[in-house]
Image 1 (cartoon, one colour):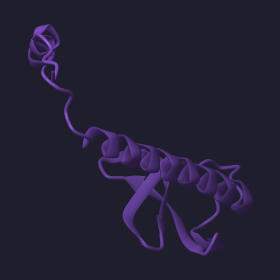
Image 2: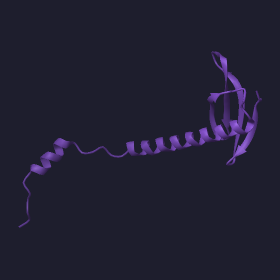
Image 3: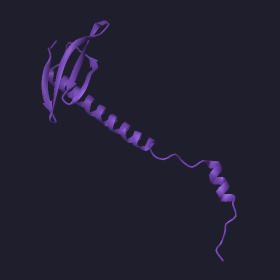
Image 4: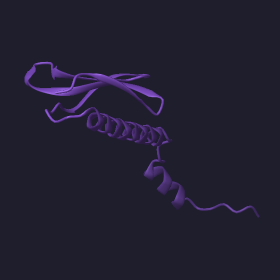
Length: 103
């Protein structure tokens, strides 16, 4: 099994390391960090046939998907902040009220 390594992709530095997950000593996982992101990720198991190239491709794909999901969630939160719709009872009462015409 290969050891940890770092690489740069899209102006981000990824640092990868195979490690045990806390409380789980049966399988190793690939952990990685990315510059300008305070989180640490362990998206998949470390396998005996892993290569630097295969891990790098999987990590880049995982992180791109993660960023897309996070952006989508930001957009959904934006829509959640819009004004609430009018109360249906108030809207119906206004619709039933007689119209006044200026004569």
